[in-house]
Image (cartoon, rainbow, N blue to C red):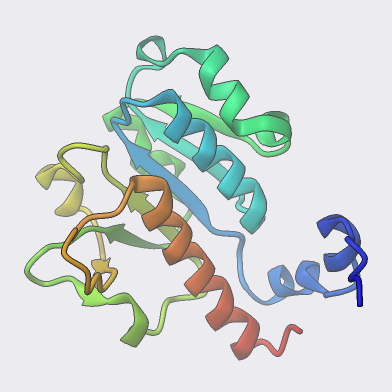
Length: 179
């Protein structure tokens, strides 16, 4: 038996994902001081996949190779709002009523898979080498960590954000009965 390939746009067209955002706000994703343009582009694509309101990068855009970022973002490059913002401006980009959650392994971090994530959320991720800066962590409502049972105890930033945002989506789909 051969299974027919179907484009994901067709597969998900009747799933009612749009209705999810009648019950909660679209998430916002923030990455702090990324160094790799491929990771930045992949996060833009991920933000587009999840239907995020926007993707924000804390840091200087001149440090990024835009050609590589655009290539990694693929068709998502122009689909969602994204921008580089300064440390001082980041909090101004967060609407009232959103919970700020860091994706980081802090002493007080909560296990992602045993934590009920809020409806209206901004997820923050640190850079590829050092993670989130302490001054940014101190501005979070709380942090979550992803249990990693294998010998390598860290994930690529894009993988970590993907795990977290799709866990958020799973929880919201169950809560709001979105099939």
